[in-house]
Length: 472
Figure 1 (cartoon, rainbow, N blue to C red):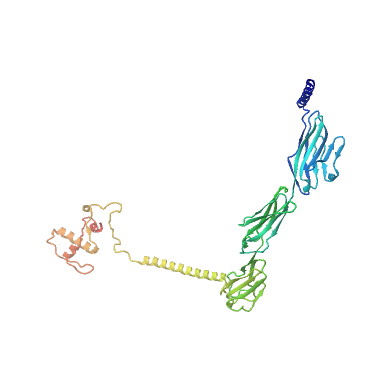
Figure 2: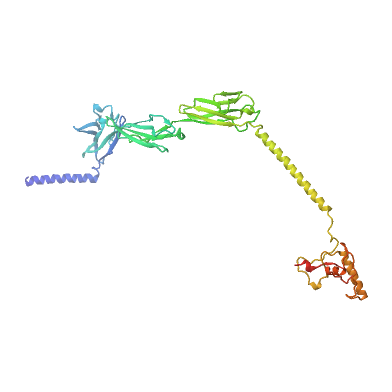
């Protein structure tokens, strides 16, 4: 390249760089195309391909279009020109359209998406004077699963072995669906995946459990999660556990007595499937006369008798098994109310008799106390020391009379002693005169040895108990 040519080339490059710099400073270079990185379409449904155009000032949108990249090259699927309008190839004429074409929006809608629509799509924007700007997004096709629940292959029987209660199936999904069972039973899930010819996958999850009658009617829930579903798909499944009859007898209240009328016993059964056979029999003897069996009821058409007492059996059967329940009937002489009244009357009579006995005993005690003689010391003043202070000194006490001495003897002795003092007699001059006591005659010496008496020389003689003998 000659020096002149080099100078011309450098000058041109400088002018181009300066133009781009000025465009960026003034905002002319501010156009941009914004699309999502990936778009998931559901098989057979519509999909929206967003394309937002941000055109800077002093730029003019001349055309926006969508191209699809194929192994053989790129093909145009939609064109929007502000001057000439919209152009769509015939193969997409019924399935593709612009949502709201403008200089800022080139979004298209593709209907009835199929597997052939999977691939990369490019949104292109042409502006003047900058030219083309583009952005690409990848379209993937999701296949929404067909979900249903099927019952196990065998019936659920109470007490049976572990078996498949139900199977939850998410059929022909792309990608494979996530399937699970929700339950508070102590079962377990068995997951199986099956690949289909069209590139989808079927998922089957069995719920394994050992049946028991206590959860009859309980509900399991199949839960399916998939990108094509807006929320979790839930299907309830109610358990149907078959079991033999559970029997109860109503009607006998334990108060059956002779002469009672309109009594009956009914045999009730809880069974799945429902019971189809009912039978009443008597175990200890033949069924008494006057008794009728209507369906599951044993009806007594007459008043009860003594020989109606016995053991009665109710038999119930369904397709699972035969069960029975025994009832022992005892016919009483009286009703429960009559027996209670009899006991109450007997108790009242016994209570009244006991009350009369206590009253009579109380009256006897009162009259006996009133008729008792007064004590021998009645009318005699017994001078005892107060209980709240000790007795006075012995020297200050009145002479004491021993216990067991009669008062007449004391009086006679006191009179004799006073007479002796008046005549001036001493102890040696005293005659051994005796005075018979209440129990017979005794000598004066013996009498004086027994007595510890004393006579006071005052207006009245006072007899005191011997304090030495009565105080410890």
